[in-house]
Image (cartoon, rainbow, N blue to C red):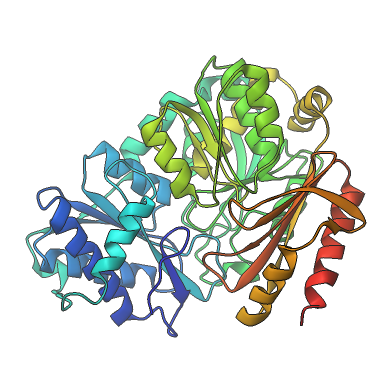
Length: 463
């Protein structure tokens, strides 16, 4: 059965992610589009995964067969560029062929609403209602007058140049290593740095559907190449984006990984203190306590949502939101689109360095001295579904963990133990993979490691 998760439908290529199933999903999207808006065109984009362009072409063929004017990107294109183009061109929506950060054997389909962001839960529910409802229609897209290719880059670049002070960055003269991780972000940060004469090296920029043997997720264990390149070249910063470039990760000038929580805190502080912006602040259930600490300091309203950017997007559409982000490195910014954008966030990290005229490690250390040191890590455990369910049931009944008393168990999305000092550990089943994730934030690195080790032991005992 085709089932949508936290951000669209994903499945293993050839097993469930087949030409036939892709066309079934595209037909359901076409039926949904025809119901709500049969006048405006739809955009189809794709990443660098195995045969992504073929899957995109199939989707385009289904859309035009259903009488929907359709644009297809000329090349692999990041999700935030696709989302921006939807809003910029006033389209009915977009289909994005990507499995984001998932392992190479996966692919997927994200649907983007006409506002240029993740499909809201209500939209996903409507699309799912149309699955298998009508017979799939298909024509070769090139044979239809409703079909055409599009280059989505130019307007996107012009918009980003309005959001980031690239002249300030150029005056600071940083040396950046750019790591698109073989994904759709290849060339995007590079193009703007080249235009402004900012020194950089781009690595992992050839198309490789196996992503060089690592998942295209910008977390520590996947960024060894970036860390080595930063250190070997005495660079000032390393900037990484995931497979479809909507997530960001970073490495400081010493080769130390900067996780998404710290990036979020740096961006929030910069937007308020340097750019003078205001608005609500949104964090997902697994995101750092640094965010509400800073929001409270600035007198900004804080919102907490279940995991999945679609919930953040919903708030962007309803409220005046300054920034919204999640643990996975997806962060959305005011005056852009209600969408994650790893390209924009990468450039803003350079702007932060240029504004303070300091190395990123020093800026981060000053932030910690202001709000306290916070350390975070996560483990992903592949478990049979019956073991996963048994484990979650046991977790829900605990009153202490790893020798520490549980003050409160929050259940917004999974089971989150709040300890008496405010630190936490979260157990949550993935919405897109057969995985149980364990996240924790503590005040020392040693306690992070100890709690995760205890969590793994506890879960292993369930087998």
